[in-house]
Length: 412
Ligand SMILES: NC(=O)c1ccc[n+]([C@@H]2O[C@H](COP(=O)([O-])OP(=O)(O)OC[C@H]3O[C@@H](n4cnc5c(N)ncnc54)[C@H](O)[C@@H]3O)[C@@H](O)[C@H]2O)c1
Image 1 (cartoon, rainbow, N blue to C red):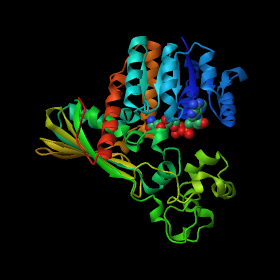
Image 2 (cartoon, rainbow, N blue to C red):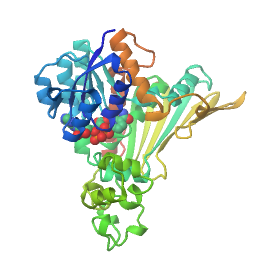
Image 3 (spheres, rainbow, N blue to C red):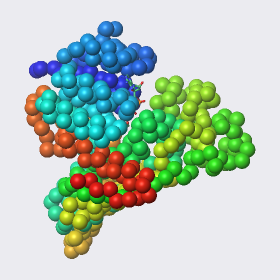
Image 4 (cartoon, rainbow, N blue to C red):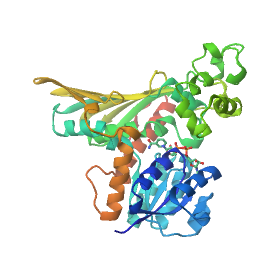
């Protein structure tokens, strides 16, 4: 069997997930290079794939300059590098598995899409929720007409107060200059799901939202700029020690590696950005935003994204002419209320599914793309960039609307 020559840029959280799939079916792959800023992660990649030193790169330019033969490049670097790395890869005739967001401007997204067409190469954007059993089940119910014609969809992305603090106040996605607006960084998935379920173009939308809470004026009087020596920390829900030493210990792994002892985490938080007061950071992305959308045929949808929930989860409510569907992604339950036949509850927990990695979506997407490259077989669910661009158009339009007091933005 022909082995796919694969390379990875960015061997962090996402890069390692795809790396674990490669390791699992290593006979299908030949890892030719890993590109990663951080030496310790390169060392891990070296061990994981038995690589030689000359297959490890700290600089993506050096990797592209070497013009290696690569069938599949996984771009799992930080958001602002996606555009150039993907263009370089397409210019060298590589297929690309591209982490979202595609790029930080709509022009760049369109250019990647055009270049993929010119080069006749595949780019798959990691909108992994499309591949989860949760959303494929809802899609199937809609497509089979189980609730009649869909008139409206309401989706909620409950980020969770601690996740907001981790990623969007203290962490990597806190500044829109680096990662794009939050509606793109966090919600291109949600916009993609709504568009996919409705299966028709979005024509116009409007949006409101703001950064209300995580700003200096809300810092309690007497609080310090780091949790470490803050006299208010016992009464603050955003106290980093309370989070990373308890419920958030697994999240600390992304920060401190495998040594999750109290001592190591405490030492790290004392000086790192993740120990800063949430009211005294350099963040500028919103903490809540709503988007109202109109699709072809006067079908509507709304998306609510907010930081202020106890848990991190998505819910969806599909309103149809003959019934409605209520889905809870975390509980993995889907309730169908048919107005004549009554209620049916699908409990995905009872099925023999793998729910790890976005409800199983990471794995399904990865191997469907590999199947396309090896066997030229395109599965029904596999989505190419030309279809993924719509969610990004919607996200950029939503940000434009938000910045213009909710004015309606036309998408056609
Ligand atoms: N599909 C999803 O649901 C999903 C979920 C989380 C993150 N993401 C996206 O995946 C990407 C990676 O996120 P992550 O959570 O793995 O972050 P991460 O910080 O864990 O990993 C990113 C890694 O890439 C390295 N890196 C970044 N830019 C690089 C470059 N130009 N050259 C070499 N190395 C580089 C960093 O050193 C880091 O190790 C981001 O674009 C993020 O938005 C997608």
